[in-house]
Length: 154
Picture 1 (cartoon, one colour):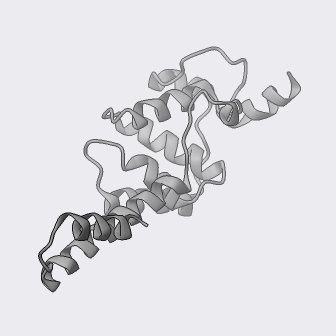
Picture 2: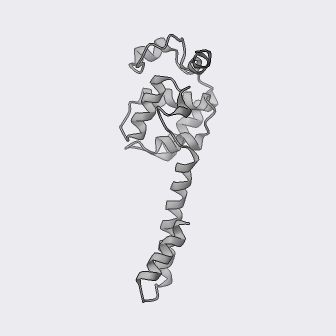
Picture 3: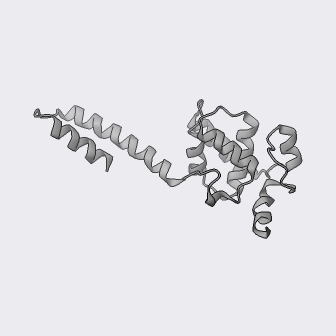
């Protein structure tokens, strides 16, 4: 889709035949753009949106910061990684979110997420979240994983 648009734009603007080397480079760049676009479209993180009313405020805040490209502390990265894995998100979806961070390293991120999944870590309790400085409101729950159930009851 993007590749064709680039080709047609270049062709329509130029009366000169584009050398094959340049066409190949354009195709490579367009392919990379398409891959990034596909990753972006796989997951649409919309903090505060209707679809995320079951996301605890602490996790939503971390996601908002990540989407804004803020550099979040290691403990927040670890916690959100566990939470998203336990929520059923794929490693690829989570990497897509992490790619917004300023010091993003896909290889390192993938390693840590796969390690979290392999170790089957539990999401830290709200008491621990508070001690980490991650808790942003009193939800009257013991663990962020219970937030969705509480929201359904209310």
